[in-house]
Image 1 (tube, rainbow, N blue to C red):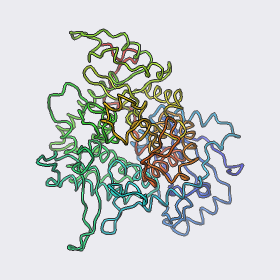
Image 2: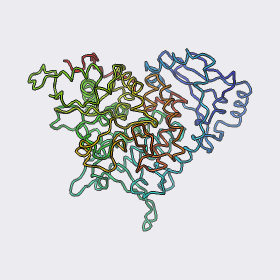
Image 3: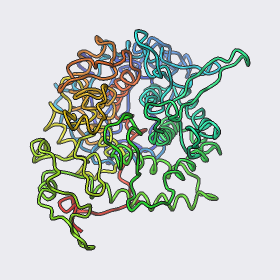
Image 4: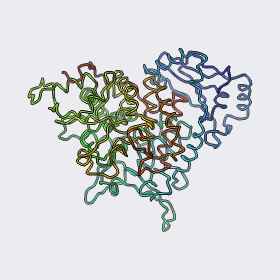
Length: 592
């Protein structure tokens, strides 16, 4: 427990504030180093005051040098103290969130006796998590370039000994939040170089597009040439031979996170990174026969990387696409051919936002409208624009849908609505502000109303509900790994805790995230950090789950650091896009 006089206070914040970072050095050092935390648009912040003796000790340390090494109890490694100066643009973007205002209100209304709710004693498993994360680091010529997917020596490695683009994201965020950006910078540079390796992007006699990013890569030592080499997998070795659509989006999002966290915009402005962004976007914005602004994708092209019936326009890809477009728009230099590309980005963002908010959103009122749809409407005034047959609505959704709450459904295409819930797509919709503020609140309401179904005993369900019986055989092709309530078919994935926590903080509900994190902490370290859990409640370790799964470890650390310091949310979240306003009454989301 913190000292009795270690209280939270509210005070005005200057936009020229410099925040002192201590690498999440633990409770004692947090008392020694007063932490400034931004909490709302009105430029208020809360700080943790220190006892007089601890302040004097801090000043003595400063006199010994501005780069004094401080041992961190979180990871047992010496950390360098440094300062990060937030620009006015960065702070204004962070402070513009209505959800951060609600967080400020919550803090201001917290009784003094309850101030401990926002104090963070390091949990015993935090140090264990950091040790495992550091063991997962992959070196290339002596430099860190990523983390392997898992360190389970009891199972055959397969491709779990490789650096996956999507898997590395929570690891990268953990290192950025801990003041260790080198590994992230190296990863970003290696990624864009692999993208330019045209001759390797072949599957049989077909060559992938120039903008495609690999799913993963591994580092091997070439004895003949006496140096390390990197071997990338663009999908030619993947199960089902599907190229990852999400890798490029995650690379762009991570590049922006690196720039925001470090203040180093030089990397994003290099010709290599500028070209990398353009190639990814040209691949996605190319003209074709599409009548929708969403991206048409094959099954297994993202985190759900096996046959699960997500072909078409999966919400995960659409949300990541939208977020990557917004991140790219802020990093592209408006010169040369970039000007025309920026115009295309603006048009696509507007159309994509309107389409997702209008056609993918489902709440109680909207479900009732779909239930009453007429079919075979042929006119520009048609209400049932995709000719969805009401009888195709699954029975489970009527019981699952609460009166308060809603979510973006899994897929929308002609005569088809996939009513399944997918966690990643909905959380990214919140973080990217693809969802309206009302929709963001609706998604969080759904989490609270359906806690047992979506959180259970181990957070969080990747999808809900599970496919069973004939539907499972038809959709998955009798996949033995995706049996009911397992793996991607309703399994519980600890890595999703960081996305859930970020969404909770952005919407002003950090207490929900704390509750989920406590569930995770109760057993995940004892279970050796599994990849996923099985069962309706996530009670059992997954039947084929790898232990010491790196993104399970990193996801937990990121969630803890965001709860400790909510300003960490600023490196990954985006506020409402004031450049792309698409007014739409929520109650008339399908009426035009």
